[in-house]
Image (cartoon, rainbow, N blue to C red; front, side, top):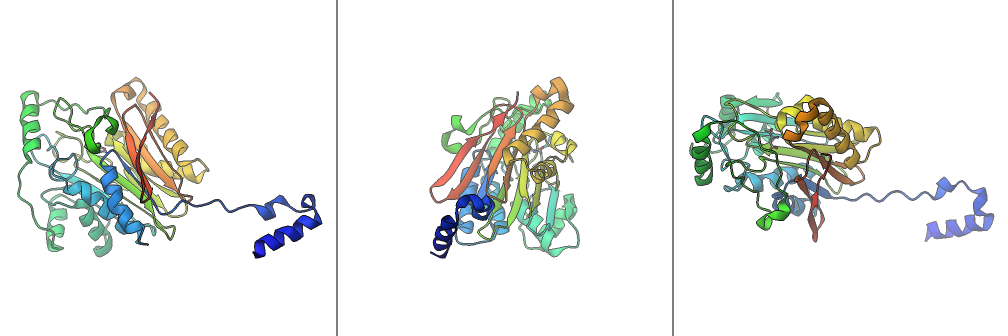
Length: 337
Ligand code: ASP
């Protein structure tokens, strides 16, 4: 009412005399919002959304969101996933909150929820990253049960199949969730999943950002191999003044450009989330040259206005976006090659 009266008064003075900026409307901020990589992001977003819509913290949302994917036995993430080339499932995860608190675990075996262990590293230790047996010991000390050392039925089949040639060949993530039933991740003919990661970034009702990233890494990788997903700045980065980004795809090439950090820094320079992701993808393509056609990398990002975007090297990557009870949908990632 007051604003309208003021407007009418000013109107009577003549608009031309008034600086237009006095009337600049504040851009609407879309919040809360959560986005995550690939088709399983729909279920993960839903869990995150349940927290966000009741005023919960983005940090809780991104942890509990990706836990849904980690718990799914028939998936490319978590203990049901494909093993390394020695037949062991090794998991990597990291988490980051609005205060730049970070936690990460890598080369973690026999623990169902690496993302929650990463959060414990963040909250309960003076460190930011624990790996291997040390990470497992810490998890057990925090009450996480040690799961049996056993491949899921699906993973055992894939592994047996893979052993015939024993050839490590990263697969381009070319299957979009559109071609899949109920957004299930897709298994490719050679036994690989079309991807191995879920990355999630969210802004809560208070405008605070957080992110999570969790993976079994590339199927049939060398024992001990880490990708980008547990590396803050590569697989995930959050800056509460600017935005948040996460990555999926060939981790070696995400690390090469400090991918998620780069995306956030590009948003700081004024780029939209989509354009920031695009520039990061272009940088990988420039470095890789002709070899870029053999790899897939996808980035997704949100900014403080609740704008979102994603970009990938080649067709097939998609991501899930949720900002209302009836708005949890897939967006095909734009691509360059
Ligand atoms: N980025 C993961 C890794 O390199 C894999 C993936 O996203 O599919 O371990």
